[in-house]
Length: 285
Image 1 (cartoon, rainbow, N blue to C red):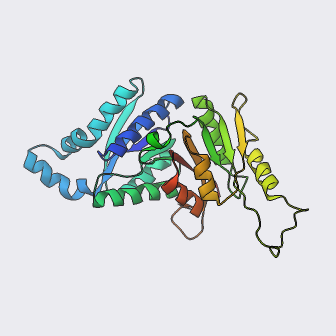
Image 2: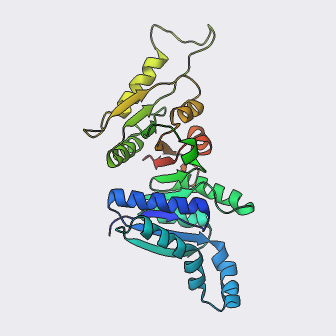
Image 3: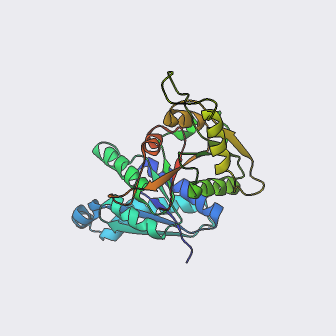
């Protein structure tokens, strides 16, 4: 069976935007679309509410959450195969388990209002940092922030140019969407005379340019590539470079002593501040 594009839904407006993105991604890749709702609500409250409504729990959940998402996906992309499921349990752990058999996962940056909004924001961060597949995180209101921008895929080139998984994923997205691929590597000029920096040996801007070019070494023929090397703090410089972009791709690296992958400071910061959707791609150990 083909690996699906999995979308975590919860009935909120951001999750419905995630359904739209997931449907488009599934159509681009010729993959099935799987819509899942995971929550302790079903375990602890679903049965009681269903009894009050005189309807089975499954019917309540499917009609109120998953059913709406399924109808939206079929309307968006009628040719995509769509399946749904309701998973009782902690959303972050259920979605991470789903990622083991997914081609990619899509989550909104926020869920429903109030306390739930804050909790579901943490869910998206947890999933992005621990999933076994690439995760698209759709930030609030990217269409407005991206207005007037140039459609393109932006790859954040980190300290490890061997981040091949993120580079391959970014190149694939660019090829599928027919968009240029822009590799961004920030750099900073050493300050003060006692930094130990020898300008004759290392030019930080040139080193950044070489790292960005290296990340684009295996891009498919036909994909237009651009190298950008802004000066400044990496998080801020990459966020600014991604303004108006269709997608920003960053890598996640294995860390010892934790639950799977952990997001570094730059990736974590970009998930909060990027002006466009972000794809977090797990890198092998």
